[in-house]
Image (cartoon, rainbow, N blue to C red; front, side):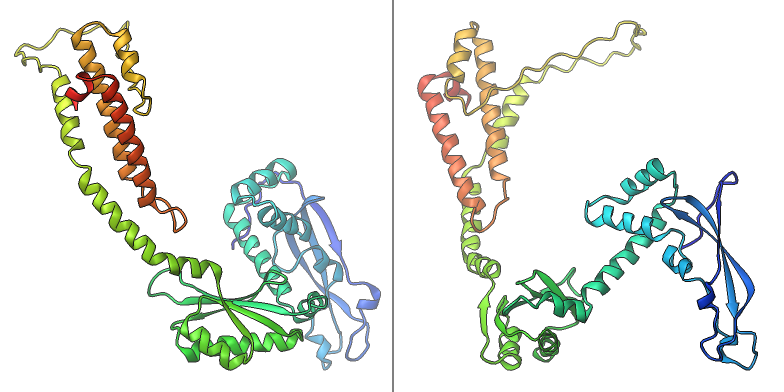
Amino acid sequence: MGCPRWKPDTQFKKLVLEPEPDERICSHCEHFTYIYEHRDRRLYTMDDGPVHLVSKLAHCPVKDCPGHAEVSVAVAEMNLAPPRWMIDWKLFLWMGHRRFARSWSVPQIRSEMKDSFGIVVSPDLIEDYIRRYQTMVAARESDPRRMVDEYRKVKSLILTIDGLQPEKGHETLYVVRELRTQRIWFATPLLSSAEEEIKHVLEQAAAWVKRVGKPVKLWISDKQQAFVTGIAKVFPGIAHRYCANHFLRDVAKPVLEIDGHAKVQMRRKVRGLRDVERRILSERAPLTPAVQDASPPPVELAAPVAPPRIPKAPSPNAAAAPMAMEAGISSPESRDRADADVVLAYAATIRGILNDDQGGPLDPPGLRMAGALQEVRGSMQRCVKRKKGGLAKAI
């Protein structure tokens, strides 16, 4: 991460920090240390804006003392910002809170920093500090002492293990979680799901259980063979339950296969829609004018011509649509055109039903397709029954 580009007219507030007298005593020979160098830094702060920080460095004057090679700095500098940082702690915590507690994006954080604090930085700088924030939070959550403290009031543990593979051919990330506190214990990437590899992950989970000092009541997984044998060996006598999500997904596989076969059969029966649409559209197509050899005269663009309005096709689900058309149409040509509009609307609706593949095991798309086609069939039968001749002839 490079240094930010400060504007030439930036007004810095100068802040000089020097070790306190009790910090100036050498820890080796107890001599009073001497200031030998100044270190200059420029950083953004939430309260004071841009700050020019001058930190005085001290060391032991005795050359033979080990403290001569050590650098003594003011503790206040670390309280303001860690070494080589461009922002102070307050601004760093503000960025992390906005990103993870409020789900702000990097452009939002950058815009708010500019509007509220007058700080203009690059998106890369914000992303770099957000990664540091994530690292600190992860280290804090995995602190053994803090973890043991959070499990004091928990009587037993419920552990889960599952593998996450971003793409085929890549390493699978095996994640172990504890459900009582909704906490991720650790994650380990593995190249294979062999029993020995999984056993190492479970042994690591056993070490965490020993550290927490609470009994394991239940294990939950997708019942892979490596999980079944590994949990039985590492955690003998502990109940191992099938994950409800994986169980439903595995049970639904044959159902979805049958549902997919039914969709293929329904698509085979509902054919010829495109031929009907092409025939109607070809009858409506205007005659193509003959191409003239002479170039047409220039057209004046003073008054643009508005495009013709295309009437909206009636809804095919309305059973009374043909009756309404019949009441407002007098000529046979207009009546035939209205009937053709209904046919095109029905064809578009059926095509949308056939292309609907969304749904899961609890809402199979084939079953939903069958119900929708049945509704369209009933609507078409009502239309043909109410208006015999016109719509039936067009179909």
